[in-house]
Length: 173
Image (cartoon, rainbow, N blue to C red; front, side):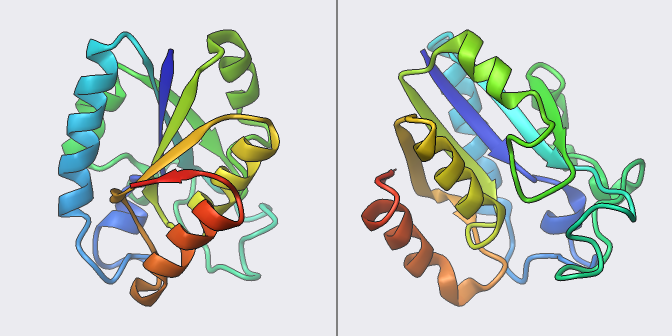
């Protein structure tokens, strides 16, 4: 079974006007993610959204990141373009850069026993980086397509994809 993990496709990153809004449009990765959700569902895989949902006491708030995607705000909501698909999927929340720490993801993956985990979403140079690392140290085969991720720093995409491949052992397309 394959598992598709979608990270932080939230208003606070994907739409303009928020403290950590990406400088580039996410329209293309949104299209890619929709296709991957459909394909994963068709193959009877599992789709998991892992989403920031912060409070002011979370360790990353204030240093190094400004308050963002605060729990219960529009900023912390999954973007409208993916919301209906997310509602048919598993949605987990995170309060740190980790997709595993207090999220329930480890239990889900232990239950599903995926042969491969595809990682999509934002940001390549922050949460995606930690996610690839955390998945790899747990022994998962990880796949990342450059069509499915975007960095906060647009100049870092190739560097981080190369790192995923050459230092973490992920399969990159």
